[in-house]
Image 1 (cartoon, rainbow, N blue to C red):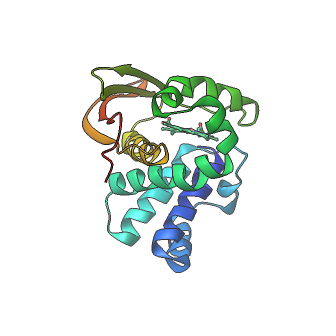
Image 2: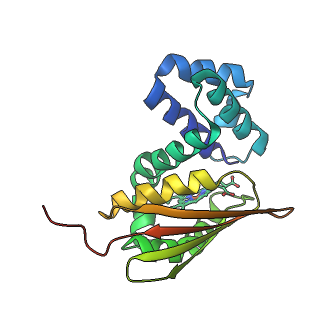
Image 3: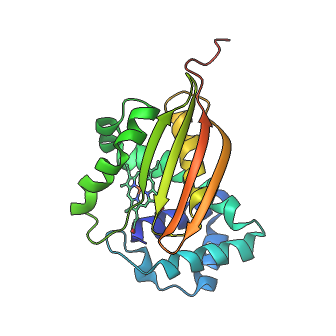
Amino acid sequence: MYGIINSSFKKYIVEVYGDEQGTEISDSSGVKSEVFNEYRSHDDENTLALLKAAVEVTGETPDHHLRQFGRFWVRRVATNDFRGLIDSYGGDFVSLIQNLDSMHKEISGTFLDYSPPSFAIKELTESRYSVTYQSYRQGFTPFVLGILEELGDFYGRVTTIESVETTLSDKGEKSVICVEIPKKNLEI
Ligand code: HEM
């Protein structure tokens, strides 16, 4: 996975658990410092080693970390360092998800040889949508759930994950995620 994902994962750990545990996790993962080189691609094994070390040091599950990291990625990285990109591809939750493949494609000039996932969104009712996520990787659906929840907050809509159906194949992983996004939040 690209270095920016690894370095952001370390920033997530430091934000939640502090500097000392951040260092303990990178040290015990055995990954080299170059793995945090943001604009280079690295073997996914490094990302998985960081995740495994985070699980061992904190006692939380891999799914917990991936979901919280998804939220961190949107809050601290995507809507902060890449705000222009987010704004130009999505004025709201639905349009951003609709345009995500084009957005990931546009940045393939910066992130050479990377393997981003693919997304589609379908309206089921006025407030329910089904989001289809397809990746060459396995195990990253909880990361997507965290991203979707935090994007809901970013766009001012409480987004609830209602159900997730994941299918594994030798090509990777596909998840159909049903989300509830009220058209308008209740005014208090
Ligand atoms: C706007 C800022 C964004 C940037 C710069 C960005 C960039 C990247 C990069 C560099 C990777 C690593 C892929 C690799 O190394 O092969 C990645 C992976 C990923 N991205 Fe994006 N992305 C952004 C926004 C989003 C959003 C809004 C979503 C979802 C709703 C998303 C979903 C994912 C997922 C799930 C992965 C994990 C890899 C996988 O599932 O196979 N990204 N992205």
